[in-house]
Length: 452
Ligand code: SF4
Image (cartoon, rainbow, N blue to C red; front, side, top):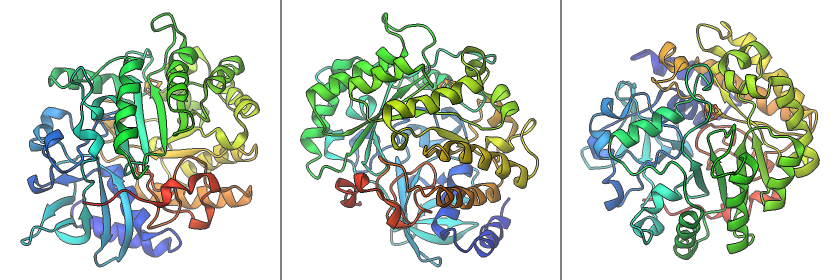
């Protein structure tokens, strides 16, 4: 897109003045990635900047061997934008590397990092400091970053305890998901990347976080990983992921808000999650449109089916309470070629229908911004991702649908509002009013981690 990108961004800011400027940039950075000058890379686990942990998917626009220096010296986990000609309020953005992006992070002649678009400096850039707890290792030498990385500026401990998915191959894997490829590429690069994380290792890593996170910035943990269609170690999906929650809650009762991202399971299985101490359940519905769900999520369609998936989501509200059921969708795949909608209008209409379906039952979905990873079928066919206009109009539609049903931002996401949000993989929290922060999100989240 070259120099036209600035014009595109400014046009959308003008047309959608109630969407915060910060969110427009954040969506564009998430959908299209960022190029990193060597001055903005980390020194991996030995430096002062918190490195990208590759917490579940690659979230990059190239494979590791295509990333150049960023494959050897990891980029930061996140960046924080402030100031510049658009007077941006503090905006936390998850890092997705794209060496050919028109957005570039680099140092100026005084060594101050900035974000450049089409060659113009548009914001100051802060990097996350290396947390104290990353400077310690487990007894077996594994790093805390590998076993229990934190994201969202330290708010969320991301526990991908099963690093692959039992939906395997073109006929089963979700068409936008590179979990299995990401596992392979880390193994091929000789990086430590544990397929199934032993419960004891997770507890040990959490004990280190608990000890050194004296500001108590870490507020929630997410247990997740690939779908389990059979068993792991004799356990089905509910018992496999649930065993970690049980162990964590026994060892650190109430220290963090426990969340699990898993398939939409039958109600009895969902009850087991709840019994194990999980507080928030994410049975992700991925994409609303029936035809697209069938095409993009062939494994889920075959094993469970879209209608049953949705029924189970509604049923799980009986167990967790509607507020604590927060299904995710991957924003942007609606417009992926060759099967997706060809107009933004149609895509927004479809997505809004899904939002209304869930919100009319008191369930608040949330979304992550699609990163078109190149080893996935949809990423390969759509290296530019979805149009930025789709992402901006979605923020608008999300907010007004919430208003229609009198809902506030979902629990477990920290504070809402531009300048305050920490959720880093879409800007839905940046684009809601700060008054929408639910009570349960407030305490520790009000104290952001120190900046570099
Ligand atoms: S269920 Fe789909 S999105 Fe989830 S890990 Fe498996 S392939 Fe990826």
